[in-house]
Length: 362
Image 1 (cartoon, helix red, strand yellow):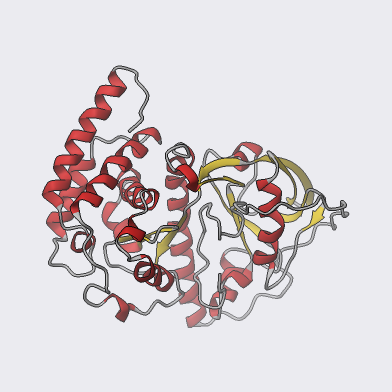
Image 2 (tube, rainbow, N blue to C red):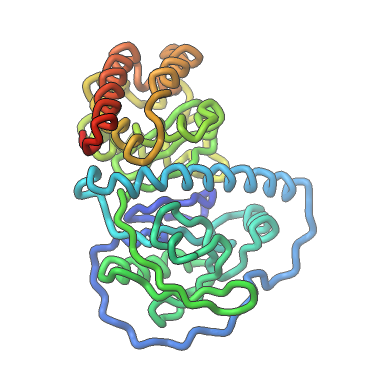
């Protein structure tokens, strides 16, 4: 990940994410290294606050809060549907970590002031229901060592830590993690978590849309604000997770186009001119869209969310942001009437299975 242009995304359990531990490479056991003494994450005096810095801090706080919310909602979708994700499920550590170098420009100062980040990687989010959550890992824990191997600090710490942690998690059932918390080092045994290995990002734009490129899912700030409830956000996330599971980006040959949109929208300052018109995205064929609706509703139900509001949500979205709103969700997914028919039938099937206490297998 190029840290010079990203907005500190909280990458959700994906092969290329910092701490997703999806690497298939095997590592030789390293000789244990002594964990260093606890150090403060912030080693520099706070800079003088300017109006530009204050704005950066406010923006950073808002985006981190939105990303935290997506991480919490997506957790059950990714973990409870690992078997449905087929070959795209991996052993994951279930947390992300960042330092001040995860940001750029004035956002470095904002990350230090708002998030208390310094040179050392700190836990940014813990995936709900993961082994990391069960082990008691907390947001703000500073990463000291893994299986006795001291973890890196500084500008390239994310990439270097991924190279250490990925192979460890892929080759074992748990990880001995040393973290700094409350002025002392603590030892945690973190079980790996089997989950769908897709990265989940918040998009830094107000258009009401969501995107998937086969490996990632991005939901815009505008879509989060429109959806409002966790349940409705789960519908959107599950729909694009399902598109990824079913390989639709490759089928439609839009992985590159959508991938470039995702790359842009996770930037500190995205180029919103790229969203003019259709942004090169072709409408999803109704048969592919309905297949993703079918699978996604099962994913929603298996994650513990209610499917009862799905019809009303997608109908409301189509009414308020019809296909004539370019680069909106319905413009990219125009077969609303057909989709609603499939949604109704799928919800009925799920209700029947739930009432009969039968497995929720699509």
